[in-house]
Image 1 (spheres, rainbow, N blue to C red):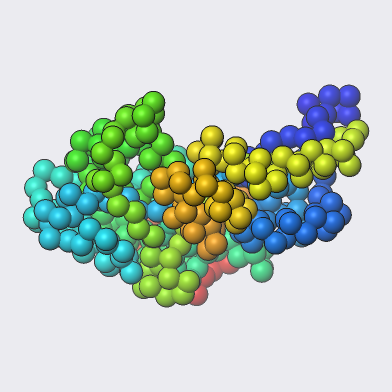
Image 2: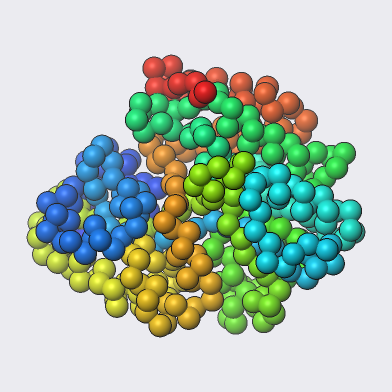
Length: 366
């Protein structure tokens, strides 16, 4: 529809992941002149939520909801293992230490889930690998130099973490029949966690919605049983914690016949009250800061905690090369799971990234 002026809608709901590719295709109009007349936007939308829809220096969308990633943990299992039920790891080492303690003291329980491997696709890349990588000093993409970063010490450290989780001689993660299945998330979120068979899960804010009454796996005890923690950076270095966000935005199409009116609709729909009501009804994390003050939003389970993570959220470098590079991330993780050394897997990954993006668009991290 966006290809032709005769069929282009005025407003379109964009997955933030696809904004850059749709801008490149000529489908979206920049919103800069409109946003400059709307002080509420710069004041209330989290900086990361403004940046996620920015491409080549221009803003192309207004986020209407987002998500965050965090650590879920079973407080009953932690209690059995002698671990604190208000647990907040400060480093990666703290996570691995807790998982090893659980393995030693609570037999029959999977200590830690980290999505990994090709079958789980973007969950492996985003919930798994990038939650690690963005806790190092090396990003996946350097926005200053406009280059992909590979190889890097951060890549190697993230793959080493995967190695420790899936080391067969001291397995902390799920067995391969679970981990390397396209149904891994359903198995983990709807079966293993409610059944008390998984202690720690690095996952998303949406997981709890499955446990609500009327959800896919109703579990009345979840609020008493499950604890939440922020994902720490590798060594606890600033900014101390990390999360990644996705979500959706409203954009004006490049061939819109009524862009001024379209923006008025967008602005009205994005008001504190209307956006807050939508985010509550759809189980979204609010992209604007003042929505958390609404009673209905504030009183929804864990919403204030989820919203607090958005202030330091990172997001995927959603350029056209990213889907191919994401697959190479999954492949590198799976190679490490199958016994390849992290350094060999990183080198193979780096060669693949160079092939995808071109040597002039890749740099080595230090």
